[in-house]
Length: 243
Image (cartoon, rainbow, N blue to C red):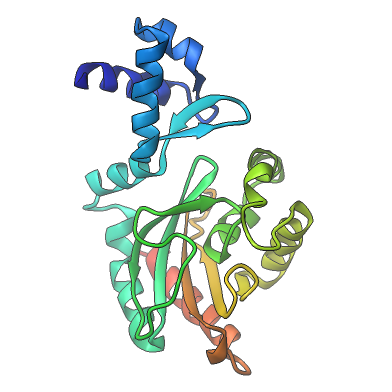
């Protein structure tokens, strides 16, 4: 069974961002359709694969991104951001996150819980949301090339409906606001009473592949707080990029 599972993972990985349909995976793996479907569903349940129900295709899941990053932890993004996450949490008392782009999703790679435990969109390390959902996610999406941005929005349209008051028009407004401001803000629109601020980690000449963000109680957001948090994120990200 393990050998067959590895074969399917390799095939899906070779299928790229769009993934592969069940029929093709069964044919290329030599498995009968029922067995192939059963293994694929198990992998989806463990977040090793993701299933696009509209296109009926399978692609690598969010947990694979976590494994890949951990395998390269030494000089990787998690290691580079550990001090920043801890320092941001210490300076504000709020929850901090390291988010990374993986296909059409934004995955939580690392976090530091704040003094007050607050609900978050991703839940914990390894949790994920569609790109376009939440400040860290919007921060990355906003600074992608227009064509790539459009492709991702179209791919995730059906998933946005699962989130409170999130529509295509609203995602586009958030993108415009984020580009203008330099960082993304959510003032309790996705989770009532919970605010967020996120900024992409922008390496010159490269697309944003990660972001740092805060999650905090809306009750803490007084005059100048959002701007202060944006400045703190910028300070830490400049230090990360300069490493």
